[in-house]
Structure formats: structure tokens, C-alpha cells
Amino acid sequence: MKLIECPRDAMQGLAHFVPTDLKIRYLNALLTVGFDTLDFGSFVSPKAIPQLRDTAEVLAGLDLSTTKTKLLAIVANVRGAEQAVDHSQIQYVGFPLSVSETFQQRNTNKSIDQAFAEVAEMQNLCIQAGKDLVVYLSMGFGNPYGDVYSPNLVAEFTAQLVQLGVRIIAPSDTVGSSTPEAIENLFTQLIHKFPQIEFGAHLHARPGDAPAKVRSALRAGVQRIDGALRGFGGCPMAADSLTGNLPTEEIIQTLAAEGINLSLNQEAFQKALTLSAGVF
Image 1 (cartoon, rainbow, N blue to C red):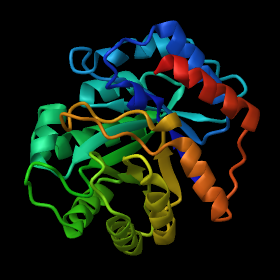
Image 2: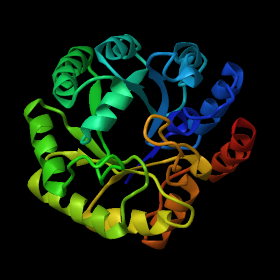
Image 3: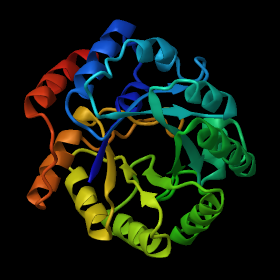
């Protein structure tokens, strides 16, 4: 199981700016825990996400000398992808492609057709730079706007991404609307149809809902899951109120109860958990 820690998602909607030196301290603490990947920042417009305007500076302050954790940066367009692939420390470039036309416009100021065209360009950039593109299928479990949605639509989007050569796809529960049944149904269908793809679960949840959602993803065969310490986060472009990420500590506990024990540094994890209270 790959556990992806998402401090970027946790921070992006905060009203107060987290000082750059505190971001660096927190991320360096997370890098000692043993997560597979750290979703650490984003190369997007500072007007859209002012919290992450210091991503390049933060990256320069990270200590990657002893960690095996890989770095992922989110982008909203080709320009951001060009910035991300310029940094040798970054392995993964993430892009939110929405199943909802309304959210694609809200999130990236583009239509879905325009976003697909950009995905093709980003995929080429990543191949040339030796990076991996991770496409998040935003509103992957429904949307609050009344746009058409079905699991078959998600499968159609996936098929188009496969044709472009994308190998990592993460259906995303952007507003926390999914049920355990919907999670298991969608991932079971996708994993059966596209066994060559690494599917990730980027789920949001209300307090108490995370364990059931994690168990559903596991039953479907998911082997990559995103979380954030204490369940902070949410997409400020999606709705008026934020629905937090799956709390990483609850993911770990749920996995352990299912017999999946991750090789994490527990002392480092507790230190990062303590430090998170000062960040948020």
C-alpha cells in the first residue's frame, strides 16, 4: 500500500498564511516518517492559491538527503507543469481533471476539452523530463452543481487518459459526497477494466466517516491512498465549506486493523503530528 501524505491539500484553504520557515520545518518532519510520497506544494497562480506562493522557496529548504519519500507538486496548467518539471527533486506532477464541467471551469478556468488538451502536453513534458503525471479525477463521485455524473463517465475519462499514456489516476471525492458503496463500486469497475493503471483514492470525509471509506477502497483493490494529518484540508474552489482529507492517523489505524502494517517511523510520525497543531 502506498500512503500519500498531502500537506499541500491541507494548507491550501487556510485563511492565514503559514510562514515559509514553518512550512519547511513541517515538511521536513513529514519527510522523516516514511510516507511513499509527499504532496508538498503547487505551481499555480498566487492569486488563486496565495497560501502556496512560496512553493519554490519551500522546495529549496527541504532535506531530501536521507528520505526515500518522493515529492509530488500540483499544477493547474501547462505553464505550472513546465515550472514543476524544471525541479529535479520532484518525481510526480499532479493535475486535477474534473468529471464536472462546472468544477473544471471553477478550478482551472478551462473547459474539460481544453483540460484534456493540456493533459496531453503535460504528459509529454513529464516523459521528456523523466517524471510521472498523476491525474486526479475531481468530482469523481458526484458533484454539487447538477452536472451529469456516473461511474461509466469516470471510466470514459479513464480510457481517454490511458490513450494518452497516463499511468496513475486518482478518482477524487472533492466535496466528501461519496458513500462506502459508491467507492467500492467505482474502484472495482475501474480496476477490472484497466488493470495496468495504478489507481489512487483521494477521498474527503466528514468526521467519523474515514474508516468505512478506507475499508471500501481496500475491498475494491486500491493500493494507493491519500491522507493528511488530523484530516485538515479541502478544496477552496469546490464549495463554500471545506470537507477535510482522510485523517492519516485513521488511515493507518484502519489499515492495521485489516492486517496492513506500513513501515513508518512512529516516533517521527508523532513529532509531525505534534508540529501540525502549530501549522494549522
